[in-house]
Length: 540
Ligand code: ADP
Picture 1 (cartoon, rainbow, N blue to C red):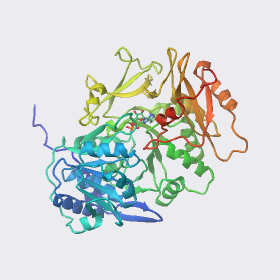
Picture 2: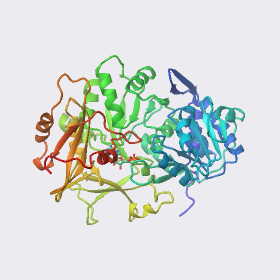
Picture 3: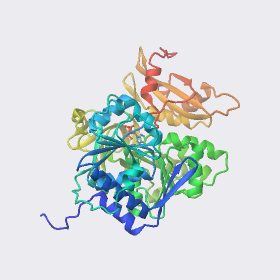
Picture 4: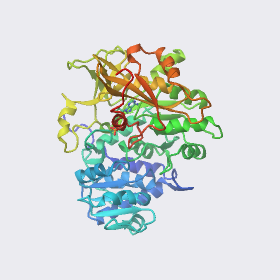
């Protein structure tokens, strides 16, 4: 039966309104060099209204895509709300994409305007000649000489407008945001998010058994706002009135530790590679991080050694989470169930190093090569598939959508086991697994084990072609810079042998200075594979 309940549309407008009406005094702090920009949700709301008026004057229509090319800051937050709440679509552009892919996504999305941080103008200038649909470039911050055509100044643009804006009635199924995946081979694929998806994701993310966000939190999204909507944190913080802290372009360990200390951050979020550096810095002492109640780590596997290290050495609990751009992005979190509190340390850490259980709102299953569902035994491997109200139904105008879904489920491309308690463990991305003879070897397991060595900073394991076994694992390791005696391969092998069968061990271990990272800070196996494609294994 229709019409039982009010016709209440789940859009970003009530999220924006709630932040403003109930928490006008709460602060939003953004780092710019040595200074902090501070204002309140009341100031923010006024400027969002000015922005909406300015967009209307620029002729922006409902559904138009508006690009952002920016670090995490208050202006980016204004775009996160101003654009969708006036009916257009905020398309966050990944500023670390190679130029050809950046041009591809702007053209594919047909962005009408790009809002760009002044410090990032040179990056955009490199591709501006290729961008076919962009009518204006709006520069945020001081405007300097630029070769970008049709530039406007953000502050001049909105400064001329009234803060009052007549917000239009929107449908919850209207598009609100857009983001392209970065880790794929070939061109990036677009995910177009509806208002409803973001609204429901905001609620799901905020639940106590998810990240448990609260007005009392001081939230620092280190995960870039150009990556998977900063995991939805800007929306949840605004809805609940949490103080927001934006690091801007400043993401060195010293910057993050300083912000945590000075702003009394309670909840930070980012990919593991960021936190490795922070861990090394905090070991040297000198920072007060006692305010942190949780650090959300996702995007790549958080090694157990890292989860244990942060908790035991600095009293910082890590909340391990898994998600995807295609999922707005949250899928699972590794909170313990109540009765697990009684479990021995070892077992509890083992659970928390898994990717976790499905958050309310997401359903998941594992599917084997025959298309059958895998048992939840913690051993059988299968592809993780998901469904739920914040998961895309297709990629945006992309024929690659065809292979990405199976009977209403989204195929994640992640190979997993699911244990009897429902905790998912990512074994690998399908394309990263090492196929050795008839057996699969998980590169993630090996990486986590190697990174548990106290002398190791980063480790990545890739498949290298092998004449007999088709592929064999090669470990690539970065050691800590301050070692008195260099780390030998033998020490790593000795440690791995305790945990892995002989056939699972890497055929060789090489030491390099730094592991290449993807545009969102993950270990870039594509680059490593290319770099080591002709590597001659000692066993070959
Ligand atoms: P991209 O595809 O651009 O790297 P995404 O963030 O959408 O960006 O990547 C999603 C993928 O990242 C997942 O399919 C999974 O392989 C990996 N991933 C995300 N979170 C985790 C995690 N906690 N542990 C292991 N892998 C993860």
